[in-house]
Image 1 (cartoon, rainbow, N blue to C red):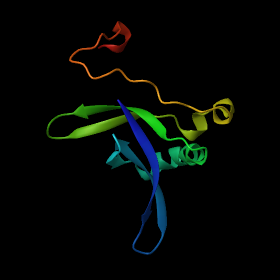
Image 2: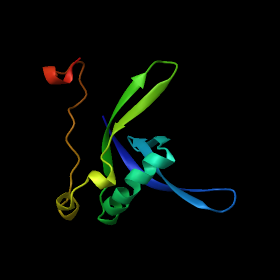
Image 3: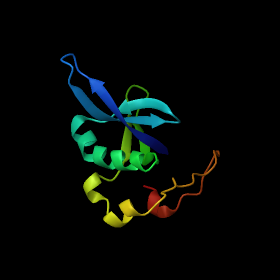
Length: 110
């Protein structure tokens, strides 16, 4: 699935503002990234927002009914090429419509 990534600001009790990355699924908040992971992505999110786009990342839900975890696949700001930054727009990949079953290439199965 695809999730969107958004820069948000947390204001601490002492008034200090801490930026972080919020993760949304279908526009609804599902969590936030750690300070360290957010620091790797914030420069990229700021650039993407400045050019009027929304950052998306591939995500997978793992775990059980007792404890679910959302695992992201997202490139760090240092992994993005200058060519990508200067080109655009960058449309999100097209997803398949909801179906009971999907044909999955062998390379993507366990």
